[in-house]
Length: 60
Image (cartoon, rainbow, N blue to C red; front, top):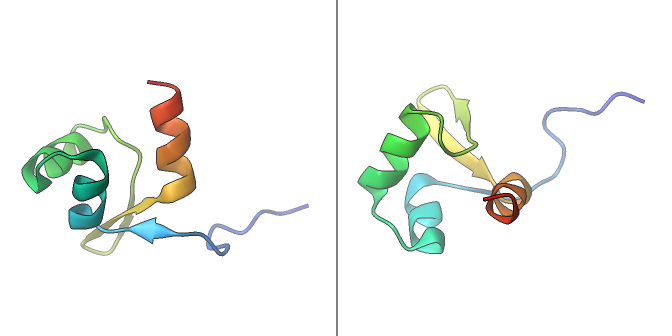
């Protein structure tokens, strides 16, 4: 079975994930730049699939 990359999932922007994690947007940009937080780039936008973020938080 092939899993499609764009299945239906909730994704958040930088400002939304910053509020969720209670950190600044600058911190989120730095974490994404240094690959410390899982994210997806869609052209110039950085998006955060919520299911992947929740899994990442559980493993921290």
